[in-house]
Length: 91
Image (cartoon, rainbow, N blue to C red; front, side, top):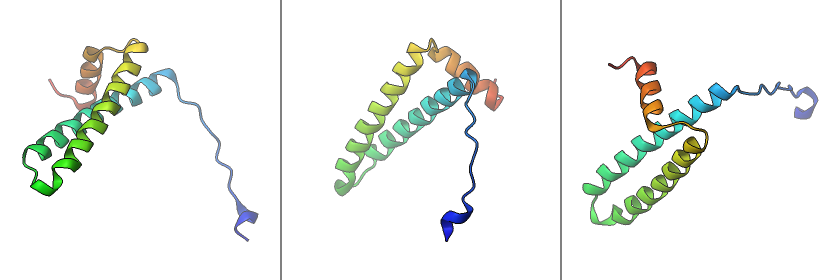
């Protein structure tokens, strides 16, 4: 019965600029996640130390992957920071 009224969504391809902005935002988000995991590790109780170590390693791997991908596209950290500050109207 549910298959009778399936709606088809049109897939819209993102522009290169949109993809770059999404990559930049992913780098910023991963950096925040890593900072938070490090802070949580510093104050973790004995039972959560292993969890935060795992979280730090996983997030660091994710951040390294994203940064390498950005470098291959010619996006530098300075560009990332500049776009972040522009978007958030800082400075």
